[in-house]
Image 1 (tube, rainbow, N blue to C red):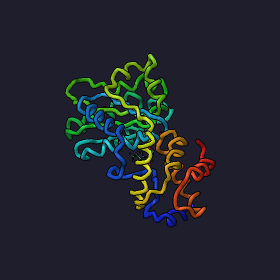
Image 2 (spheres, helix red, strand yellow):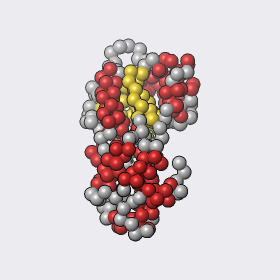
Image 3 (cartoon, rainbow, N blue to C red):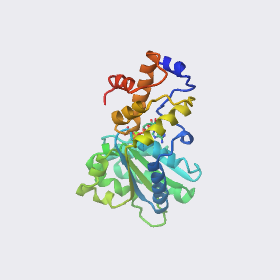
Image 4 (cartoon, rainbow, N blue to C red):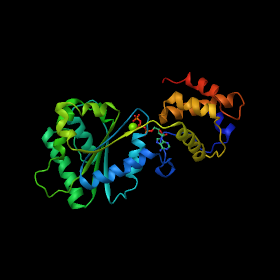
Length: 269
Ligand SMILES: Nc1ncnc2c1ncn2[C@@H]1O[C@H](COP(=O)(O)OP(=O)(O)OP(=O)(O)O)[C@@H](O)[C@H]1O
Ligand SMILES: [Mg+2]
């Protein structure tokens, strides 16, 4: 399965899972996320980043955060699940390097707030809590999460929370019990599927960062990838890589729609 790399002359694996921020293609939605991050960090509050699976949410937010020096911004990142608020608080404590394994909700909440206060007041840093896959959070967690943003006195400069997740995240915020949290949302972005022209640019960009300057995808292949992936990036990666494997196996120098079709039979989309 890796013979295609030699066949096409790749220097590194094309379409990787993680890409250095400087190597990312600047898609229009990414600029919007950066602007909203800046706004939310200055104002304090919550920003929402939603989109379909594999639309590039986590990558776009990581790119936006990379514009800040670590001395300027502390990011506290957790990947949520369907566990209780206590579990989420524990995850946040661990991400903040606080040594806790047990404790009441109020104790954990106090520890998190103290740590944030130390960073914001003591170290004069901006703080961003990133809760990825936030669509998985339980409704009762949504109902209480806003309490984390409430400090006893006003001396603490605002800090920000980024809730990142699939489209259902926005739906969960419309529940009546979520309204205290929803009312603290100051900015939101929904990542759209990319267009066919953007797909062409996206595919060529990935080939280039993996060391191949030549255009390997015929126009029919680009259309097939765009349609097969519905313009979503991770699916496009899988179809493009699979298409190259199929083309290399047949000794073709150009990937065509038929190769993408063969690739799609290996994928669960
Ligand atoms: N701007 C970009 N330039 C190049 N590749 C990108 C870019 N954004 C995303 N990708 C590619 O798309 C893949 C999917 O992106 P990402 O993991 O950020 O999506 P996601 O929306 O967070 O997915 P999930 O819904 O599973 O959490 C990445 O692994 C990366 O290969
Ligand atoms: Mg993600």
